[in-house]
Image (tube, rainbow, N blue to C red):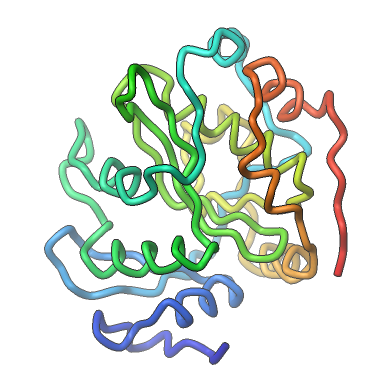
Length: 233
């Protein structure tokens, strides 16, 4: 894997290998707008993280997850999840997910590096999230909801699977009030890079991303009532 050229991430010259190198180096790509063909490399001074050992699930959401309002699937409709994240919504008329971003993440998914957690109801995709895994780090990219709490339920199921599989770092990129409700914190990039270096040495059990979980099991795993196992390389 070669070092990416952070100064010139053109749509034509930026590859899936460059994208993986970016994540390993502590930076990530974004588009300026839906119709802008360029890919920009972002390195924020402060990084949003969701500590896997301190994940918080609000009481109402715990009840929702346990009630199993959605059929949770993993990696059955990755491109559709990316499209859902790119759709305009109230307060988000434009998107950073442009055509090159779609192409790159589809390639990572085909290679087993990008994954989607999906919420289905009556065979209709109603919410979900997607992100990239590298070593023991999972880089959350985007989420969407077409029904109440769908993306939140997907996040709980993601955290449960990450904990059970031995992941050690969940990167949320930017801190938001929404993520703060789940225990997200903001940390300087310099500290994030140290955490990332350690996480990249971890070898989680990828099969746990696809592990079937009931709502009760997901809440228990995300809340640390079940013990994860971590395996270092």
